[in-house]
Each structure stands twice: as C-alpha cells, then as structure tokens.
Length: 84
Image 1 (cartoon, rainbow, N blue to C red):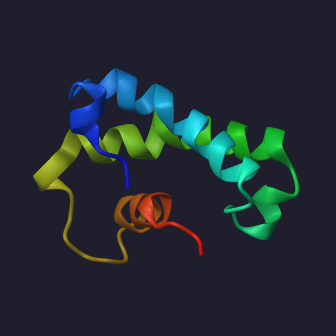
Image 2: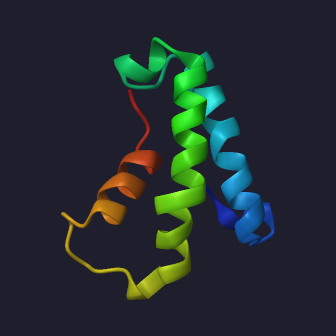
C-alpha cells in the first residue's frame, strides 16, 4: 500500500513514484506473470495508469463511485494489493 503521508501528500509525487514501485515489484518477482515477463512493458503500463486512470481516481477522491466493479476502483485496488 502506498502511504501518501510519506510522499508529503503531493499528488504529482505520488503519480511519479508508481512506476518506480512497479520496477521494485518486478525486481522482487511480485508482478503478475505477463508483466513479470517484460520489465519495460510493466513500467510503461504503470506510467500510463498513473497518468490516466489512477490520477483521475485520486482527483475524484470520495466522489469516486462506490461500486466495486467501477474500473477505477478495480484497478487501484489491484495496484495496491501485494502479490504473495
């Protein structure tokens, strides 16, 4: 889970760190098989997600729909769930 307090509460910083977290997860073998197989693809997808759906979800905050099937909630939940 990303602790935004450690990032100074800066949205821009939080979005910039996500690809780095993805690279770290790749190094430790914690990504799904399709992303673990291709580091460049994993980081590119992470960057696109951070600058798109994730940024929008963070900006919406509590206004984000509560339905668990909403694409922003599903993706952000998956981004924060550590793989065992």
